[in-house]
Image (cartoon, rainbow, N blue to C red):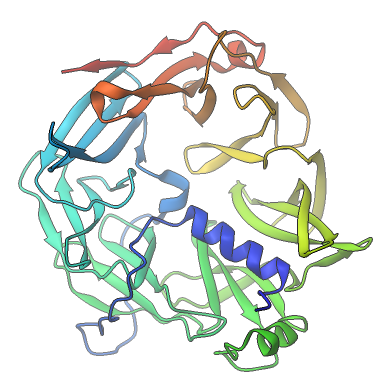
Length: 407
């Protein structure tokens, strides 16, 4: 069977890789519990799960399923790594099973963790930071993505959506558990981040109404004349207010190949996209031959940063909710070349002799880099973290400070 055109397929893959994990078992989509009415204004500052992934200031929370000596399920542990004190501790243990993913959503007063039980019924666990009892919130995470949140609300879009279905929106009250419709365009493809007081979304712009036919040949034909558009969208209304960038769904022509784009984050008023360069190869529709970085300003100006690699994909390194660096991994999987947001090479890293894992995962506000240096078998195979001053890391130093597990 013919697959989707390469650009859209790449976008689908990127969305799948970034989104919180969910069970693939089909589940009935719940109807909102409240009567349809205009969505109220958002309460508090909005955040994007994909930009935070369990981080809050200088703290990281991670949830992990645990098993006993007989390989029987023994509950879920939530670990807290404090990069100020240099310690990782067991924050709490719950008997809930089937936790999905290792990165809770963090608000000012609670952690929210996706879970699935033996019957594949998904829900959301609310774990108060003060240690009080965990609450279970009814939300079918098999049917809803949970990309945007504030301290009060979570904004979701249906997993079954554009281009072959009509995308729907849902707003969940984290205090009461009640839901109501969130009005977003039916052609919305994904929600990708938060910027300039709004949210970054993508949608399919086509002369044919959504949903498009599911037949692969018909779908390909329509998408070849359609556009993939990134917008700054008003979270309260769910409606796009400014176009950021667009490109044809079948890619921008480049020689005998094409370029497709994946939104990767922002810094200030600048938006950054990874450009995936591909060309036809015998037996395949296309194959990736390299990646580069495109910067799009708030005024629509575009600039290729001149970072081009055929090695492992370029990775953004976040500082808070903004991109701070771009990382290009080397073939040895433990060293990297680092670039700033203007495309200048600012460092080539080293790794301790014999290291199997050694890569940056985050930038801290105080000028340190968080490194992953391995995995701890005695603590549910959780990552071993370390910190190192940014200047030292960029100059090739390996004099890092490892986080200590405190029982």
